[in-house]
Length: 166
Image 1 (tube, rainbow, N blue to C red):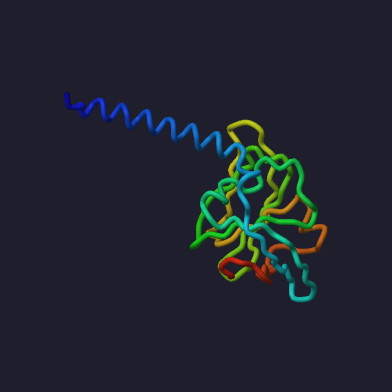
Image 2: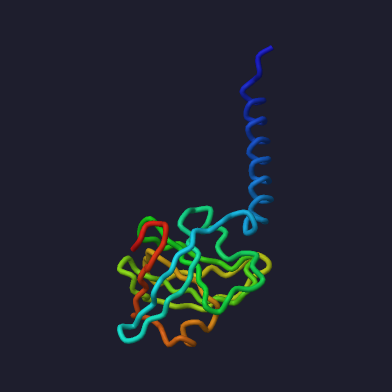
């Protein structure tokens, strides 16, 4: 007996549901399993500079996990989101428990927008967008930029990493 096209569609639909459920289950615990590349950046205003250790989110999977599920992060730590080209992607704080700031950075490494982001435990969560396309985004604990005296117009430079540099 030959399987019908209808039966094949039902089977494929069920397989997709199982895959989707698996992705959700795995993603909910990814923080403990996924290793982010590490790097060091320098933030400078031309007069003063600050070295900052960062984790690098440079793939779709790493960017989707970001700083989710972390109960705390160090004051002088960041996550640098790296995109292949200029983007207008949004960021949200679903399952992110620490108040953050995000700096949107152009392809030349210049910070052009900094926004505060609130933790979000249940949907719908606010989505944070840059006012124009960006190439990189740096998430840090809220108050970081004010505490260190950096802001819009300052530059972010990659000092050492094991991934593609600016």
